[in-house]
Amino acid sequence: MEARCMKKFLLFLVSLLIGIGLFIWVIKFVGWPEIKNAFFVFTGWQGIVILSLSFLMALIGTWKWKRVLEETGAKISFQDIWKAYLASFSIRFLAPIVIVGAEIFQGYILKKKNSIPWSQGIASVIIDRILEWTANLTVIFFGGIFFLLMIGFLPMNLVIIFGSVFLIFLAGVSFFYFKAFKKESITKAIGKLFNHKLDSQPLEIEKEFFNFFKPKKRIMWQVFGLNFLRAGVMLLRTWLLIGFLGKSIGVLPALSILGFTYLAVMIPIPAALGSHEVIQTFAFSSLDLGAAAATAFTMIIRGAELIVALFGIAILFRLGIFLIKDTFFKKINNFAKNNDDRH
Image (cartoon, rainbow, N blue to C red):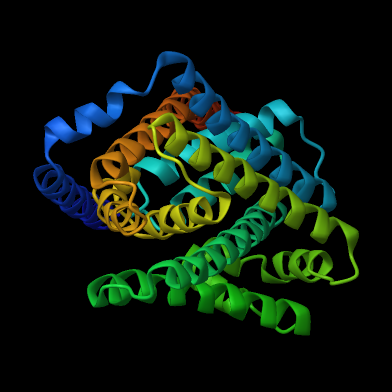
């Protein structure tokens, strides 16, 4: 157990150092004076708009997860789901190297705090994430096509790095849909990711997948719509922020930039530090928006999402205390019960 935790910590540290290195390289390449000049046109009320849209994205994320949970038969308040969503967002944002760590936390906290069966909770999380990345991959695909039509080429190193990540995600999502619609077993593959916890209840989880993913089922398309609504809010945030930085841009170029944001998030580096700067510097320069504006753009987006993540960390801390107290009192009760049985 200690060796596994140490390995995850080292992976987190390495990914963070890579991100810091990329970030420093971009700052030196663009020049700090140019970046400061890009920030000068950004005002306080504009920051409130960007932050509000970031929280709106989290609200829509909570809403779509709630709809999935309701379809599985779970009864849970929006407030409880909101807390679990923000806490998991902070894990996903700050420690993406911990693969499926946020998803496991979501399923675990539903079980401990709201008495939602593990199979039901984790199935809702997986369904929600699959639908979310379906929307994200769609944005990347169409944004990439428009970008290629605009500039006609991509550097080979970016094609290899980000193209490979895109194909891996696309293959995973496609595999899931192929199995779900054909009602073929997928729990063995997922069980390897979630370790023994899925192996103990594969039939229940698989039943939730098959029950939800039906082309004629309205709820599936409703949640699809909510995911694209969230992407639409993110597109609006992208378009407005570029305008706030003094640049004129249409909706389709903004879609390309949003697609590059999704690509950067796919790289498991905390807060997409460095990776977001690298890819957006290329995108902004190719669209004649300026490399300095790209760095300002990524830093403002990261700042807004960090504030959302800080709220999540506060909730995560409180939930952690709840879990510790719950475990502690259970051990005391078990100890007292064992003593009573002896007497």
